[in-house]
Length: 150
Figure 1: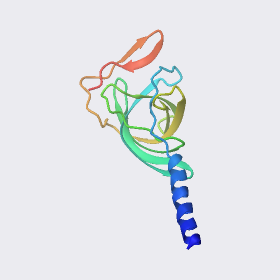
Figure 2: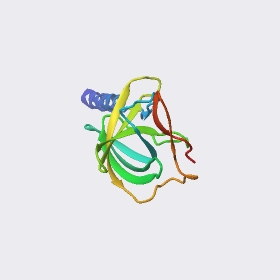
Figure 3: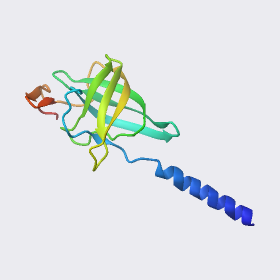
C-alpha cells in the first residue's frame, strides 16, 4: 500500500515539475531595434511543448509598401503570441532571404529579449486586409514602422 501511495505522489510531483517549465508566451519587443528592420504581423500561432522546446506553425504578413503573406513553422525555446492589435507587429530580419525570418520578442513585464527563427513559405498576397498601402514612417531614432495597418 505504501509503495502505491509513493508511486502516486511521485507521478503527481513529476507532472507539477514539468508544468513549471512551461512558459507564458512572449510578446513583440517594445523598444525599436535597428538590427531588426522588418515588421511582421502574426495572425495565427499554434504551438506545443516538448522536452526540446516549443514547436509551432502559423501564418503572418511581412509588412511594407506591398505586404506579403507567409506560412511558417518554428522550434524555439519560448512560445509567442499572435498580434492582437491592428498596429502591432514583431520586429524581424532575414536569416536566409525568403526562407528564414528571425523575430524579436520579450516576456511580459520584463526587458529580457528572445529571438525565434521562423521557416517561412512566402505567398503572393497578404492574409490581412490593408487600406491603401502600408508605407513606412521613419524617424532618426527608430527603424521604419508601418503607418497604418487596418
